[in-house]
Structures are given as C-alpha cells and as structure tokens.
Length: 615
Image (tube, rainbow, N blue to C red):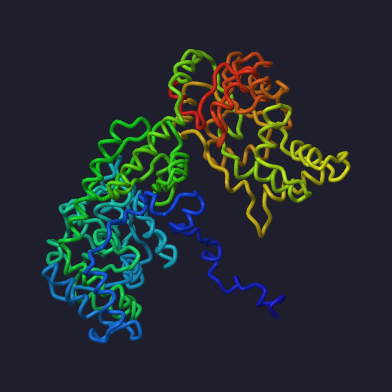
C-alpha cells in the first residue's frame, strides 16, 4: 500500500493551507563556514541580534551542576519541574511581582504560541514592518492577520490601530517595543490608549534591556496587558531557549494550564536562573553591545551606500542606497560578515538590511567588508564618465548578468546539461565563449561547448536534445524546482524606478519571451520597462532586437547596458552607445578591456552602482 492508494498520497490528510507551506531554515554557522571557506571564529555573525559575548563562568557551573546532580530535584535523567516553581519565583523577584503573574516557555516564540492558542479570536492585529513570527503563528492557528502599516518613521499609527480594533472586533493585538527590525519604541502613553480597547494587548519586550524602557508600570492598570520577555538577547542564551510572560494571574494561570508540561528543560532553567543571579555581570556585555552599536551608526552615517535609522535596540536597520540590498547582503556574507536581509518577510523591506551589534572584533570585520564592497562595486571614474552620456532619450538593458544574476540559473543549467551528456565544462569555458562573441543563445552555446569538449561532429546529442535537458533543469518539474528560482535582481530597485521616471526603458535579451516575462514579474520590475526585444526578435550581436525596441519606444538616442561583447556590438551596430557592465563573479580588470574593444564607451561595476550619475 505504500506505492498506491491512500498511503501514496499522505498530503490528503494535511490541512490544505499547510500543504503548500515550505521550510527554508537558517543555516547554522558551521555550514555557512564550509560554504564560504572562512573559519567560524573569523565570521562576524551580525544577523540575529544575539549577545555573542561569553556567558559568566558561574552560569556554566550552574548548568553542569543541574545536569549532573539531583540536589535541585531535576537532572539530565529527570523531567524538569512542569510548574517552573523556582524559575518563576526568580523572575518574579527581579520584577518585584508575585510568581502567579509569571509563566515561562521555550523562548518567547513559545510564549507567543501559547497566547495565540489560548485567545478566542479569529484575527490578530500587527503593525508591519515587524517580527515575522506573529504572522507565521497566525497562519498555523488559522488566525487572520490584520496588518496596520507603521508610519514613515516606523512609529505605530495608534489611531489606525484603534480604528482597526473597533471595525474588526479584533481581540488580539501584538506589538513589539522596541520593534524588530526597526528598533522603534512604542511609548507607554500609546500602549495605554490601545489597552483601553476591548482586546488583549501583547507587548513583546524582547529588546527592552537595550532600550531601558518597559510597560511594566501599566500592568496593574490594565488586566488585558501581557508583556513578553526573553533571555535570548540580553543574557546571551539564544541557543538555550528561555522566555516568559508577565500578566494578570487569571490569564497566566490559563497559560500554565495549556502549555506543554516540560516546555523549559533542566539546562535552560539552570542557565536562566544563573543569568538572573549574575545579571549585573551580563549587563556589562549589554553596555558593550550598545557601544558597538553607536560605533557602527557613526560609521554608517558617513558610508556611501547605507543610511541608518534611529534605534533603541542592539541592532540598526539601514536603507540601502544606490545598490541592491540583497546583493550587498550576499557580498558581505562571502566576506564573512552576516547581516539580515528581509525582502518582504515581515514588511516591505526590499531596500533594507539590518545589522546587529557585536563584539569589537565583529565591528571591525564589518567595517572592513563594507569598505571592500565600496571598492569593488563602485568606480568613481566610470561614474563621472557616465555623467557625460546622460543626455539620451532612453536606456536599454540586457537582462542576464546586468539586471538579473543568472550565475546559479542559466550558467548552472549550461554546466549541468553538459555534464548530463558527458562533457565536464567549466565556468571558465563559458566565460571564454562569451568573450569571443556569438554566444547569446544559451541552448546553442551549451550544444557547441559539449561537442567542442567531446570533439564530436554535433550529431549526438542534437540541439533539440540539449535544449530539452536544459529546459528541464531551468524550468523545473512538478517534483523539482527549476534553477530559475535562484535568480535575483542585481541593481537597486529604487534606482531603476527613479530612472524610469526620467528615461524610457526597454529590455534587449537573448531569453525567450516567456522567460523574459517571468523574470520581469518575479523581480518586481515589469512596471519599469515599456518594451522588450527577445530571442524571437533576433539574437545579439544582430542589432535587429535593439532596433526593434528603439522603434517601439520611439527613440533614436539611447544607452545600452550589457555584460558581453555581443551586447556591445549589437548596440554599436544599432547606432547607440554601449555601456559595459561587469557580470557577477567577474573581474572588472579582466572584463573592461574585452568590453571596450567590443565597442563599450565605458564599463560599470557589478550591480551598476554608478547609475547615480544619470539621476
């Protein structure tokens, strides 16, 4: 029965909405280390807002004692206390409240999960951009997430939240203070306004120890207020997982009743209690993180590509200016500096990265990597030269290697297709073929490389067979995602949008029309370009597709951006200026002379940060 019938379709038993859910885990440090070839101790991990300082030795001693001794009533062999008696008492003592107002969990995520399971509501209000866990938990619980966007300065729009509560009859509001990822505080006077509504108000104070503020003073006034805290951030126990909630005893009692019985393990409880006991020692590291945050902010204020927002936490959110945020994040990763790129997770943050405060040595690695990024991705001389060519009617763009990073898609499809037919070609082989020219059709290029490598006459495999295998890899199948899913945008979306307000914009690509349209939609740039010339209109260096797009746009003067000799030759043959660009992973010094010889007036860096000259 495992190969047919019911057992062959296990997803039929799964909720329809969850059957479509996929899991993309964060890679652990050792895996990242292996991927980028940098030892873990040399990586600046600034992507998760952790306290990277070593914990006090007393905490490690408490951990060892708890796991090996029966003196506490628990050990590695014995289940932990399901009532969390000692832990709740210690937490309560720190806050000056009674233990019946405290419940602990396996990190504050566990606490949020318990609350969502407990509250009788079909909706929850959040204010993006914000912590993505609220929306995730809502999906799992079949709770409709009502999003009330924050103001331009990332402050909560309190009147809009109140209006949403009243109009939707929503019974649950979740708001962090400070907010992750923006670092903004929700003032107590605003919390007081929201708490006057008929709903449960959950204030997530995961980062309150960095801000020095809390809504604790409102707890006695509002029984519908719950505060969530964690040991992951200030105490450096992200890997141990301990969080807790503070609230009215009646609500806390119900949370205790429905939580998993042993949701705080022996090791976690021991280290959390030791952290409370030695809190002052740990706060020295908290102050160090805040110092490093300020160092980072001062550096960023003078940095070309990043603009930091005000923050009250151990991280800073930055606008990425002139370059692609995901591309910068990827570059820093390769240099051993991990920062956080969100995209649309938790809000519209496609032009932002978040940088956590780290140890002094982490800050130095960050600065070094950012300086390297500017050196590698911005050519001041080329920028000034480009400024001389700004008086044109339109801008034309090659797609692959200029607008879209295809190093993991088309290029990989070439390599894997060739390997499928017994030809182990390399990236260097592809680059050499592109440099010679006449290689703008990747199906034909793959076919030619296979037969050149195998020294065969071209009869087997045929071009049709090569194309079929290539397309299977690139497009994917119902059971295997295609390589096209790995494609990312190279320039800054914001810069492209600004250019489209000043110039007419067109695409000239060797892609089939369907692949071109897919990329435009997936990258979110379809609204920027008015016309496209594709494989069906001619293959560069033939100028026909260039001339077609010029005619469609009604233009006679243009700049065309391309990363290959075929792009440059097609532009020149069409009577317009060619602007070369360095493709991902290529050397500027190596590509510049090749593209200049092919007719490029100048050559821009990978990601074309020099485009600011045209604005």
